[in-house]
Image 1: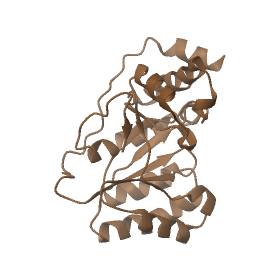
Image 2: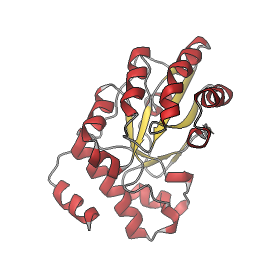
Image 3: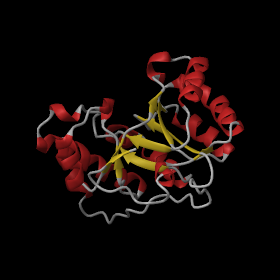
Image 4: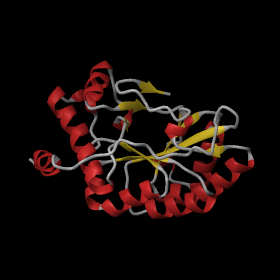
Length: 225
C-alpha cells in the first residue's frame, strides 16, 4: 500500500515538534482571530500565502497528505512564512467510518509526509468534515495529536463567491474565534485581501491557533476550541 510505503520510507527521519512562534501578539490583551485553511496545499495556496504575507497576518493550514506529496515545496513555504501546520488526514477521510488501524494510518502517514516535506511534525489535526468521536480522539492521542475544530465555518466551498465569502467571515468573526476556510477554493483566495483588510480595520490580530492558545502546546487527545 502507498500508506505503508510512505511510513517505511519516513521512519529514519528525525522530527521536530516545535510550533511556529508568534510571540509578539498577546491574545490576552488584544483581539485575536485564527483563520484556518483546510484541504491544501493546492493551486491557489500561493495566492493565499501572498495575501497573508503582505498583510503581516498568520494563519493555520490543515494539510492533506496526498496534497503535500504533490506540492511539498508549498508545505515548506507555509511553515517558513510563520504559519502553523496541522494534519488533515492522508486522503481526506471520514474517520469514524474506519477501523482503528485505518484511522491510525490516516494520521500517522500524514505526520510522516508533512515531516518529510517540511521538517515539521504537527501537534494538531482537524478531522475532515468535522466527523469525529471519542474513539477518534483516543487514537489521535496515540499519535500525539490534539484536535482542532472551529467556532464558525464560512462554507466557502459551497458559496464560491468572493463577496459572499467575505460577508460570511465578517459575520462569524469574534474574539478568539477559529474560522474554517479552504485555500484550495479560488473564490476564497480572491476574497482574502478584502477579508484581511476589513478584519484588521475592526481591530483583529490574525494569528495561528497556537498563538490563540496563548502559546501553550495543544494537549494530545484534547479538542479545541
